[in-house]
Length: 350
Length: 281
Image 1: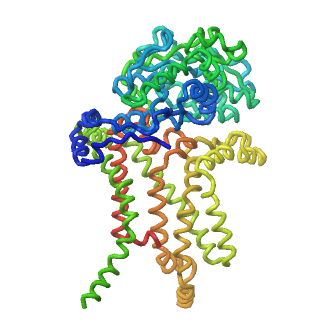
Image 2 (image 1 turned 45 degrees about the vertical axis):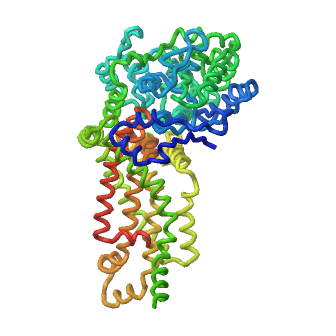
Image 3 (image 1 turned 90 degrees about the horizontal axis):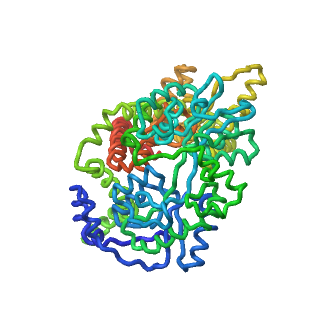
């Protein structure tokens, strides 16, 4: 059951609300609307990615938290950034907690739609999000077509040395930094991004990209079925193809790390319990167990001691792998990400 | 006298009373949100026409709008070319055969949209049966089928053809066979029989089917993204990106309103020529 925080103002005087909205003062009406306490005080609502993510979180984060505190957890999926913004806007809360990527987090914090938080572990706080887990976009290839794979994005771009169809994610904020590395930019000089140079670099690979993948499952499928010979793919999705027995290999070198952050919806009446949950979910042991099942890397360094070596080898945050990767820097992107994305879509469509 | 007039009044009110629950539902869950979307398109992020300016003049949006309408038109044409002969076959077959064909046609409705899309990926893929067939007949370097305009159009026609077939079939079934026979007795044969008698008789079905397929196709999103190349981008996908990635509710709303207005224009033209009430048979 989704919960609703009733906004009495909207019930009694809809015309006033509409008027305020029409005059662009929606924020004022939200601020003016007091909350009606809800009947279920002991329930937290969490927005999740569903599927295997949900299962792993339920087993290692949600159920143990309920056992420890008596606070029940309900989930709804998929993760929707738009919904987070809308529920603050309307005062109707469907969830108290969600996870955001770095770029979204910067925007959410700017827009004032998330609560102020404190770091539950040292270095764990960024823009009012608590760093939880990470995944990497890595290069992978079919070993039946390519004996020795590329080691850098520049080699991934080299269609003479590595002939074959390629695939990259249709997502500007992830592809543009990769295009710059492929053009010879050093990681330390990457941000702010030189967008013109990035698009010139993309021009060179465009004809060889058979698929711009949009969904994680799709990327696994095209690698596993051999639709493409080289791919930029999330590491967890790569291991899925490997597990299925496909002849594939990957490298951590120049892997691009995305961080996921827990955030609390602004002004939710459950903020206190939500903060308690986030502290629990990013504490060493539960986080270690969650990332092992869900194929992520833990961002709380204290988790590493609970992760055995064979599992660590599959994580971008394990020290040996992490040193080869690079991090996104969404706070220093080098332009408006929305405009970059529009330009990217335009470039794709032409 | 009064009793009688009361009764007729009640009789006239009755259909409206029956409609009330639906009307309330539509107002609450459709009209009100739609007005909200219209308001947002002018007020987010502030009171402005900028969203519409960008939606109508931005090269990306122009390109995608044009592509959306061209794709919908082409898919409609393909559905008609596939659907018309099949509907004819059904109308001249025995009741049992017709039912069997109808069953096969509607069977694709029973599987989820995504499953059907992924099924096409398997069928048309590099290691799929179709490429294997090409190789078996000696074509060693078969053309790329997947992730092209061909594959996305094929899948959309597959999904939408049933709407066309059922619309045309329902009209063909009602045509009195005597009309065709009289035309034949008056000397109409083959092409001229089709052009002067059968096509005009089935025109309402064709128009209904075309409008339905066209309008549904305008809103397609997943199929062209998963099966086509980025050049086959449709407007629904861009609207989703605006809302979900950039929280640009104003821009997303403006794009949705432009699509809505264009669609209404098409429906109005249709209504002028055929009457919207005929859509429902």
